[in-house]
Length: 228
DNA sequence: GCGACAG
DNA sequence: ATCTTGTCGC
Image 1 (cartoon, chains in turn cyan, yellow, purple):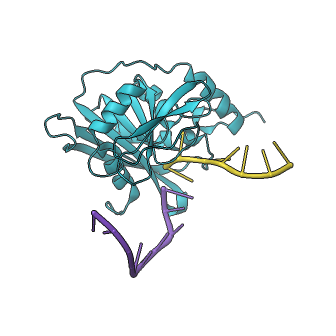
Image 2 (tube, rainbow, N blue to C red; image 1 turned 90 degrees about the vertical axis):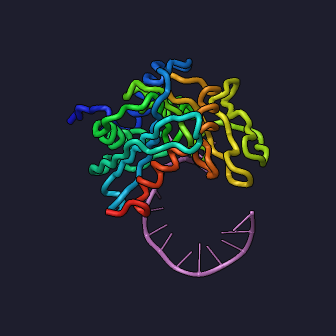
């Protein structure tokens, strides 16, 4: 029987078609409100993958102390895992839980950093871009490895970077966020340009490879720092 | 047909 | 992502 499919339970083929449609709605120009709070988002799993755990950390933006930013709020939301991981369809697996976490937030940020790709995706809708549309907030994707696009080797000094290209368009940047450490893949999600994305990522970079927002969200979602 | 493949 | 201890290096 024909299954009434809602956005989070689509078959791979339909999900891919939806991504192409949603990507057309992405705003690739800067439309940010003055930034006072930045959020980091990451997803983890428990019970052998049966439970999806979304973590969101909100930091107060203070140019005077950056990259040392104070944590204003942090929430963890758990719910049954919906679908298996399929390269290219990550957002359908992680966004439902992420939205649940955002609903519990009392302080809404003006900028969100997500663990994963923004538009550096085969159909230009990585998890950061997809989440940006749902939240209607500027989002930046910061991935620890490459999904799509080609690039030259990156210099080995902190701050060195090279463009991540797909054909004739630049979809992101490969940034050496920490000397001698594997670079991160930065790409805009929604309502922000690559240039502005890079500026914010670099401003939030402490001594580690990941910018503070996603580094803290990563820790929260991973369970080692936060048990139970 | 043979790889590549975010988390 | 997750399963897992120690160990090399700044």
